[in-house]
Image 1 (cartoon, one colour):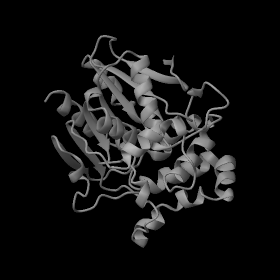
Image 2: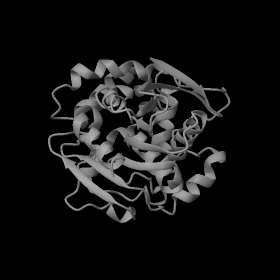
Image 3: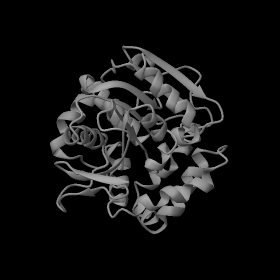
Amino acid sequence: MIESVLTPTLTIAYEQHGPNNGAPVILLHGFPYSPRAFDEVAPALAARGYRVIVPYLRGYGPTRFNSAQTLRSGQQAAMAQDLLDLMDALGIEQAMLCGYDWGGRAACIVAALFPARVRGLVSGDGYLVQDIAHANQPLDPEDEHRLWYQYYFHTPRGVEGLKQNRRELCQLLWRLWSPTWARKDERYPLTAGAFDNPDFVDVVIHSYRHRFGYAPGDPALEWMEEALATQPVISVPSISLCGGDDGVGPPSLIDEDAEHFSGFYERRVLAGVGHNIPEEAPQETLKAILDLLQR
């Protein structure tokens, strides 16, 4: 059942599992995904007595902006502020956070800047705070070609392509990013409807432009972007889940993110798993969450 809660910027749609008085766990999807990514994780946590919240990010599903005048920002600070606003609106002082891609970035930011609000962090994958000041430094060509969709979204053609072909384009990304996952074509239709949100295109385009400095951010969030520019460390207990077959961000042999974590931290590379970590590897995701909850 989908519920909704009013926050200062959004009316956030979310799914809740488990008892209201359970210890809170918030599960955060990424692009181009939806709460369906946690279909096997959320009920398993609820069965153990946890209160599980699975929101639709801004621009997805039934989540809506409260005002037509609000910038349809997809910047990292907006995702983090949405998470804080959701927690405040639901009366959650502290939660276990698990997210990947955009959702993992929101979780990393809240963990870094507001550690008292975070019991533990499962990130897919690693340290996801953007270093915008250095975003235009070219990567190795092998890595650059995997990011073609981001450069596509920098162009008017890419905007029109996403508008006209959002389902086909996102399905292509599913196939490229999870090349060895046998269930991707079966599972994709369960998520695709979330992209019909009227703000999906604007939020996605802004996200992939702002991170390169090609679009201005929300002035109200500039303070947070300035804090993130320092690349703050994450001190809460954390586990990084990396898909060994991730087609957009394959894991490096050396963990380059470890230096950004100052507390308990563990990296787990999941063989045969692509980018859609919780949907492809629900048992490994559940285990990581429980390992932190039971520390």
